[in-house]
Length: 273
Ligand SMILES: C[S@@+](CC[C@H](N)C(=O)[O-])C[C@H]1O[C@@H](n2cnc3c(N)ncnc32)[C@H](O)[C@@H]1O
Image (cartoon, rainbow, N blue to C red):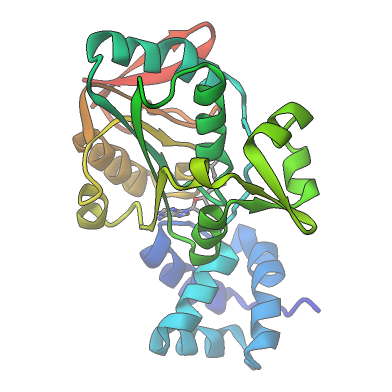
């Protein structure tokens, strides 16, 4: 059952969520509060959204559940296709041509349930860009406990796999586990998964430096100030000659001057200045 939210509750809860995650939810998103948080209200036996907010402020676990509920985890395997061709046809080969014995460090920021980082691994493996000849480290982060836990398990339903996977890749990269399919351990174990908040610069920079950062389809939920902060922080984490990839509907115009836009066969990416 959907429980109605008042305008005051939208403001107070919206403020709390923005502070914690950067996600902007205003009165235009009343339906989203109601559809995503009504089940939590029922589960926690809360009489109102104000009651839920009071509990979240006191109890870290409830706050985590609240954030998990408001995060949009929409993703799919090989989402938008072109970033993955760009990676195997240009970015990774260019890197190893210039640095044949170095490790390529890749970050999937706001990785959701892991499809992005596993798609990268599958694309690179199929292209023969793999260990032992080519050394690549993968890090994947997300603010959502639920999403990052699922990502690190690497287990997907038929429905999730139907979005972007073909049967050839399925049998090559996954093992059947009951009703689910699990990415083979040798691919899962090469990713470092970490719960991390893009808005917390200290937390982010502690992850280290990267040659390629994917930060797609998350900043669309942030205010302009938070977008600027996130992309400027990410710029400090990119090695010289490194790159940033953002979502197909996103742009850095008026957001950050730390990058130069570039294209390769129709795919857009950014070079760190
Ligand atoms: C729409 S998904 C995008 C997933 C993937 N990058 C893609 O393009 O398919 C957005 C993800 O951003 C995460 N997210 C939202 N705010 C975040 C923040 N402040 N720090 C890190 N991750 C965040 C959400 O939990 C969600 O999993």
